[in-house]
Length: 293
Image (cartoon, rainbow, N blue to C red):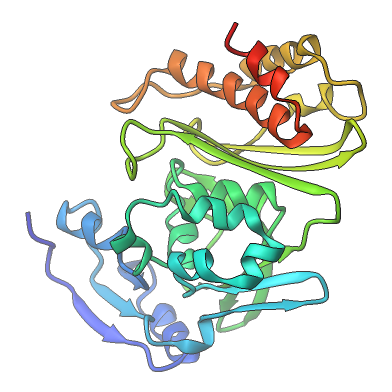
């Protein structure tokens, strides 16, 4: 199939892009990397009257570390997250996730802002931002506002962005010393959409977990921050404790059935990921062995 007819405008500045968005409203779509939008156009799942290309706005690109907050410009490419020393040192979870995003050709063109604004529930980065308690920096003609990741993702392909607004950057708090991260996804083939995945941030205090944020993806209409971690924080971790957390996780999840995986399979993967994550961040491989008995 071919995309429906549309007009194309290249924005010369952020202000120009915002003026165009204000003028065209819901009839416009932002084009950054295009790795999600162009297939949607070709399949006629999207039919904007105007495409606003922001791909050359260098002011929306780059990674900066300031006051223990890492600011990532919306046009920063997935490949940049893989090679950035700042990301590797400060936010290793993002580097781990970037390696799982599709294929090199897509990582070389796709942008973090485009990915987050697209809000695919099977995507890796929205779950990472929820685990890391990131904030989205949103620009409009009336000024700038910030939205926490937990409030930004509102459903399948739905976010807190208004039609006249632009995602300009992401502010990610640098995890405190003693923090550890975990990332894994179950896919049929490398580069496929995840059947279930987990992005996690843990603070380890001796042999215990001082904090644990488990952010699942491909299991709901948006990334899901598990409440079941209350069974695991500040207590001695045993296989029985993990089983309690798994039971509560199972009760709070309502995964879909689709062509990727059944709801039962997704529940099984979610339970397994919880077990593996706790064993990994605590450095206790014997716990992971319990999960397969």
